[in-house]
Image 1 (cartoon, rainbow, N blue to C red):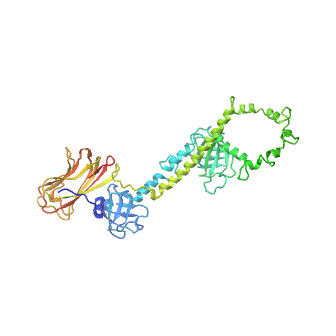
Image 2 (cartoon, rainbow, N blue to C red; image 1 turned 45 degrees about the vertical axis):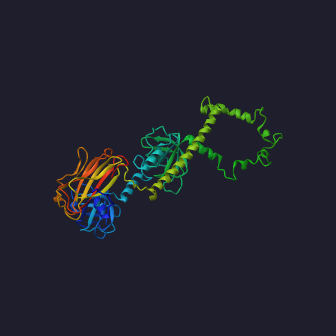
Image 3 (tube, rainbow, N blue to C red; image 1 turned 180 degrees about the horizontal axis):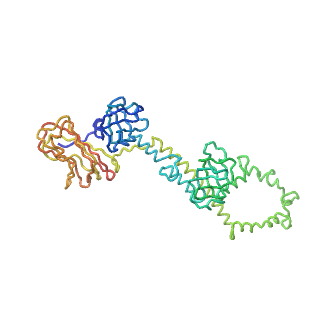
Length: 481
């Protein structure tokens, strides 16, 4: 008679997943966050992060994840607020070989972290902080104020080790966020850094209109970046009605720049004001006196050209593009974080054949068969590693001609799960369970099988046993059929 797989009932599934069944020996805490079983004293911790299912008492059918186990007194501490009722002495409970959703979500949230995690720790937020802190490539650095010495000195522990000369006189401190969240001064202010202590991350700066505070967020901007703000400040703020065209006027009308300056052939016009370019006291003479070319050469060095100025203009455009992209990236990261925390976006991993994922295979076999060897499971598609196997007798003792049973692989050198001594008929009592734990590879390439051998003969009447195996695919797609 061939064996047939079937869906497990709730009770059968609970029995299969049960790592331990016990009865509490004394009352747990009144808030339902602990239970105590003195039979667990001196046992190893096989309980933490497993699920505790209450089988009797006020909290019957409730389950919670176990966060801690104390083997000195047999106390189990539960996740969060615990059960809805106190777990009193005499309560039946089970430890199931599955983790709770609460613990899994807590572990995920721990790995994501929060925006207060310091750079260098292993959370997602900490790595993003490190990326933005060290990703400026010399133009922009982000930091948090960790201490304020006085009105002109602050410390940023995340900005140490650059060398004392790095930030001095070449960077400005821009306060991007007030830690209190009120947007008050010095948020939005910028002051030059005149000195920097690389060891302790101490910045010396011109005083802001209001003092900095711990956790204020600052950007250290290179002078070339900061000068863009200088230029905008000097131009002033333009609105839709207050723009350059509105101020200068439409050059095709009389109320415009031409009208203001006047016609160049009159005595009261721009030419008359500036003077003849051949005269000594003219705009040209004033410009010549400035020695503009010599001044630019002194500032930029010999060899500057119009192309240099064009290159600078191009670099400014490139920089603005990159800053815009960085702002967009920060927005995407924020949206991605919110999406990750949305329970609706957490995928349900329902494919049991994922590499390394725990699988449960179930079948039945009737011991009312002639003495022979019968198939239970076959390794299919990819290799699997079997970690546990259990066979459960029905509600009567085995008998008839049966002398023993055994379970093993069909390899050239069989790997034994349950030998004939463990499977002696004297041990096949009503609802008895024979179990094995370890690691045995089932080679799908050779079609390796797990088989049961009946010794002696048939039971004499139908005698259906449940057989459960826990395994993991070595390569995605492997399973026991």
